[in-house]
Length: 183
Image 1 (cartoon, rainbow, N blue to C red):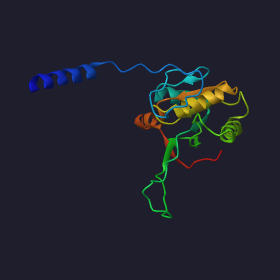
Image 2: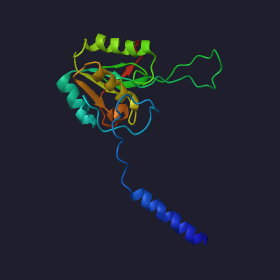
Image 3: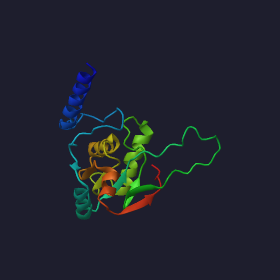
Image 4: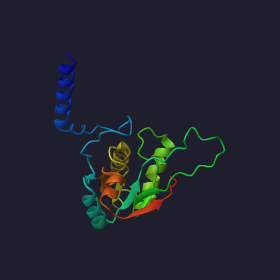
C-alpha cells in the first residue's frame, strides 16, 4: 500500500512538472487592487508591452523615454530595536531611471495619486508628453497599475516592461544606484 501511494505521488509530481505554465490572467478593466506580487497580464491596453529586456532596451534607444521604477521601498525590519539606524541596501535601477516607490499601488490616497500624476508631468511634460517606460519586478502589478494610470490620464507613449529589474540584470545591461525620489 505504501509503495502504491508513493508511486501515485510520484506520478502526480511528474504530471505537474510536465504541465504547461498557466496562461497569464486577463487584463482587468481598472487598476489591480489585490496583492502586488503575482502573475500579471500579457497586455496593457493603450501601452506598448516590452516583453523582453532586449525589447525594452531597443524601445529606450528609439524613444528616449522618461524611465520610472515604481518598486516599493524596503521596509525597516520589525525586529530592529527602536532608534537603531537602518540603511537599506542600495537600490539598483535601469540606467537613467527615476525611482518613485509604490507609485503603482492601486489604493493610493487621492493626494498621493495626484502627486504621482504631477510627478509624471514634471518628468515627461503634460499628456501626451514624452514617452514613459514603467517597470518594477517580474510578476509585479505595481508597474502595470502605474502604466495604466498614465494611459488613463492621456499619455499616448507609455511602455511597460514586465520583466523588471531582474530581467534587466539577467541581460547584463547597465545599472545605476538610485535613491527614492519624492512625489
